[in-house]
Length: 176
Image (cartoon, rainbow, N blue to C red; front, side, top):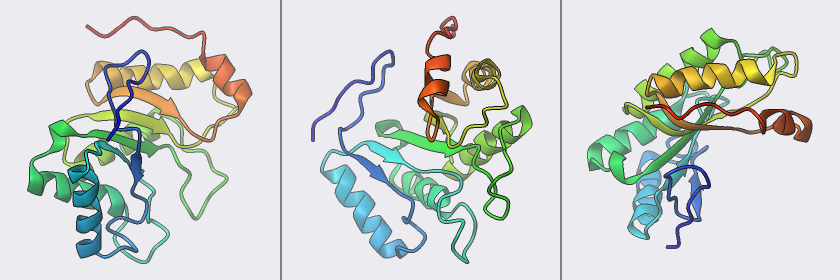
């Protein structure tokens, strides 16, 4: 397996990231274990999930994160993995209602930590954006969680180029 450093971080993920939206959900537990084991045995160390993954299925909510948490605990391999998860996604029954307040982001981060059975998330994505909230406000919320040790680094998905450009010049002092 090849690895590539993520610029401005100490993360060295495998160049193949295993997306886990169906792991522990529409994929059986036995098959999910087989997939995860094969991936890590081949040298993969980068796993992507989200608090919303598989919530569209008639099963226990957040099943992807819950499965990953059990799988890591059984193998004792958390420190060998780079875990990326996402939060701030609208609820599925109200897809147009933003969930990016400080309290909602905190709820998602703390929930992910609990379900994943870990003290920290390596890479945390805001899964959606709300252009009515200043970029600086969202970054300040995420920086609070970096300082608290909940997340190591953060990113975003489903943002416009304009919003990404607004975020670029914002710089914070490294956490000591």
